Amino acid sequence: MHTFKSLKKPPLSQEVERQLRESIIKGIFKLDEKLPSERELVEQFQVSRVTIREALKNLIRSGLIKTKRGKNAGTYICKPNADAIADNFLNLVRLGHITFNHLIDARIFIEPDTAKMVAVKRTEKDIISLTSMLDKAAKLTETSLLEARLLNVRFHCKISEILDNPIISFTTNSITHAYSKIIIEKTSQHVGRDGILELIRQHREILKAISDKDGDRAYEKTMQHLENTRLIYEGIVNKV
Image 1 (cartoon, rainbow, N blue to C red):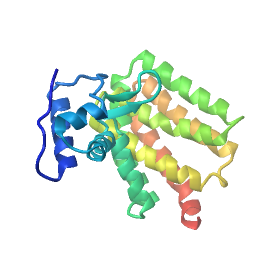
Image 2 (image 1 turned 45 degrees about the vertical axis):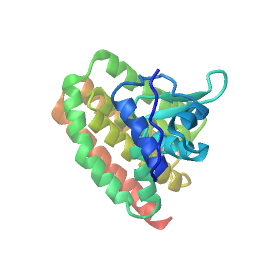
Image 3 (image 1 turned 135 degrees about the horizontal axis):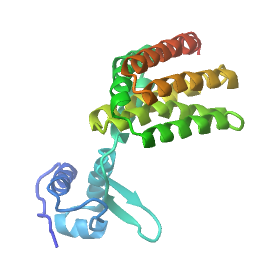
Image 4 (image 1 turned 120 degrees about the horizontal axis):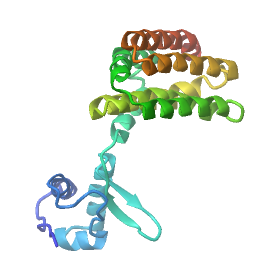
């Protein structure tokens, strides 16, 4: 069993975090493997429980570990995801350092080219999955406009994941997370069912181009959709 060196110099929580992080990166602890308990880590590092908790909290923020409750309660190694990046984007939005136009400009910079590349790489399974997503979003407009919008905006994330490029998918997911949390909430009283269905219709046009393996049209339809989104929301967001 792997053991850690006891610590004598501050900042102790940072050193605990560093040793744990290195152990994860080096593969000493594998994906989905459970870390030693807090008590065991306290004994190995010879530090306080507060120090251990602070180190674990930072690793959770980094997306390297997660906690589980219940029968299999504990701290486990997890596959890195975009959550930490998304939280930083969201904080920047809430602090006023990122605006609605910044979000749209970033999406315009990334998503049309992504759609163009996906049109070449996509499989029939991808088309079925994307179609199902839009169908479900349209159905949700009958019961929950918020859920319909949240699912509909995920369409762009799903497209980015087809490229199997973590940098592109993490970036797209992060921007979308900030967009959906802030923009959708701000405009919830201004966009009705017809408006949402129109956005879904535009997504279907993008999907049709991708399905036809027409990269140039997928690029153009994505660009048009994002510019339409800017026009629909810009005035609303600036007033609220």
